[in-house]
Length: 302
Image (cartoon, rainbow, N blue to C red; front, side, top):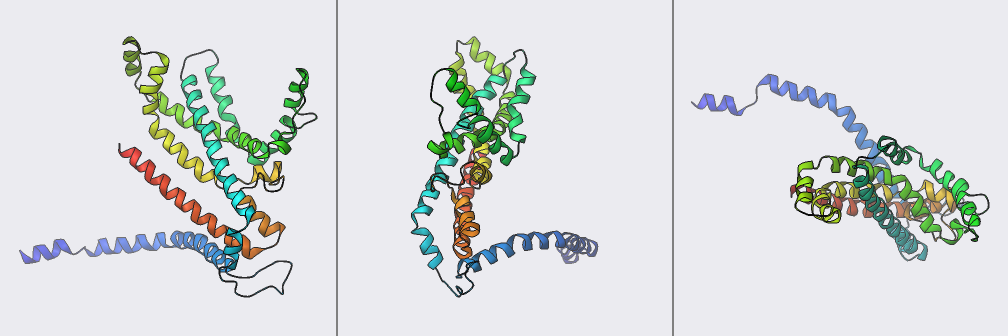
């Protein structure tokens, strides 16, 4: 009996050999992933503690937390952080709210529905730089832009959107890019709703608003939480749209945290300060990601 227990408790030689072979096959990929992620992080941490300026080689040495202190007390950093929060919140409200309404609309049967679905999803496949150039030069230009022509046609004075409303304009461009993603995910969720449930509610006298509020919206809660999580992670790193359209200006009126780090590193040549900003951005992104993942997990368990 003791021999049987010992035999069942200890893995056999072929099993140990198989585990060892599997580890050897996976080890190159694991090593590459570790090097890919850990080496840049360690270098960023190192440079954030150094006095390192690309145009002043005499400025060197250990800086301690001076780079972090200077960045955290800089009004530009606080403004950029606020712009980041406003940009993320605004795009989420527009894309999730508009995506929910469009998903419910495109779930209805109407002529040309297939073409309409293709058109609403198409902007998601346009590269951010191309999208920003299209909006800047074709749609929003104060002289020959489409919106300016429409305003002149009704007797109004055209607006220089990028100068007068820089952050709102960037928000509009990014929302145009991410609205198709929300529509795609939410439309799939709407189509998974049992049609008999909606028909039963309609026969019981529930109107369109009541069916949307008490049946469709609760059914979309999980999909909405997933859309919010994915979009938030990507929206924290918005860069191309700001660089192409407003270059963070006027001043820092449309700068977010990602563009501020870029300007510190490659425009002001302050590698130490930019690295400190990168570390702070990593901390903020991980805190937000952890919160969102827990929120989504709780929602999926319901």
